[in-house]
Image (cartoon, rainbow, N blue to C red; front, side, top):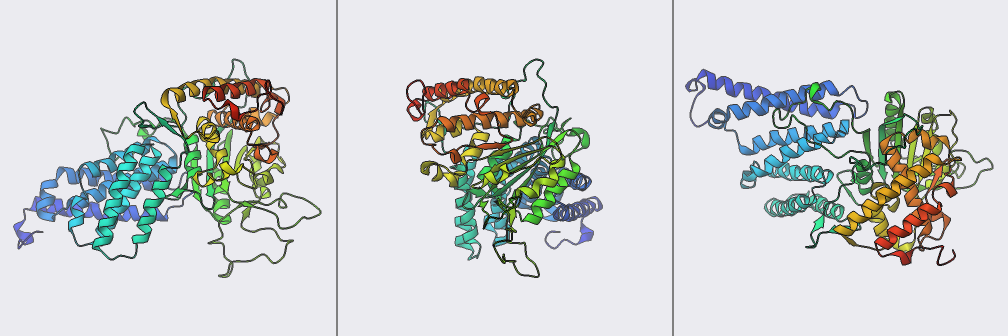
Length: 565
């Protein structure tokens, strides 16, 4: 209520408008705060609650639009409060994307975040002497940047980072706060994230071309007529990041960021965007799940990792595949035992911060005991009761070669090199070369050849050539007489088919590259691929040399016709 007005001076209708608005505002905050208490795993428990929250925010958003004049004069509605509601709706859409993996909801989040900036909802915040309001604005910027990164809007990211930098500077000068270092770290992280790609594609005017590496129409080689492959579908994926010193932003390492895009189709705008912004009725959802459902786990403890694995396993539909991607520091065995079982080769690191017993972190007592904060190959054995596709990017990836298929279900492990040449190792902070190959083979190939930029026309020509190479690799896999059936059982799914093809391309390219001399510098798999039919195929070697010639880097590769190995 404004000025000296008493409640009696305000017309009844306007008083009811203010009361209804306050009710919706309180209800929306209550529901939004309750989202934190929902279980992070499982597909069913959270959906009805999310639906109710969206419903209230939809009503609140429309209500403030319809009654803005009354709310301005009688309630004293500030523009930053409208911005706060829009920001919450953006967050809801973003979290809906995280829970469903439907990229179209990223566009919805973007439209709300974008509107906040275009309409300057937070503009007045800097004039108020309230640091907590400025923090709301800074957090909005950080969330907007995450959504823009996921949508590959890199030009806008750079603009937002510059604006955020100015806002942080203004904030720290006006208020002597303790969180200055934290906000400067946020800036450093996002700047490193944006610069993580080792190769840029340039237009003729030297501006950077943004390339997308999500699954696009026509980017997956079709199956040959009459080819019999498995009908399995990739339904669930756990993307785990626990690499020390790798570029990260907002609990996403660069490896996790790349792998999540490799498991998504290009986003489309929801048809409902303009007509019913802020609603999520069940009939508005995409007709079928376009992308596998994903859990993104940044530095999980063993307990957390096992809980999410169990939840995914429990809810995996029939004829579906669970993918586990591990990008993590290697853990090596302390000593050798007479019997070498699935817990004797080490594995990859899980986070130790929160695994405590009686308030103390448990230390190993002797060498005979196994490392506790480690995902051993044996830890995955129970989950091989259903089709399992594992990717391990680690300095101890080969621990997972020692798998045993106990239950006869389809099982494949793709394993990164464990040793890289120094020039490649020096780049590891910007993400692993192996994951880069699975995400964008041409980016990885150019990087390993020492290129820092490629002209757009040349890039497109090389990509076109690679499509032919992928088609041929697909035929090498499906026509091989000695290949393990597990590979073919996964080959019916487009995401898994592309990952297998890229894996073979990566293996073949590194085998021919002169810098990669040790067998430990080549990817491996369980079961093993028949080398002569795939990674050492003369047809594929010829293709790799042709690609090297297109990019004018043929001198970096062994050519059998010119020189001996």
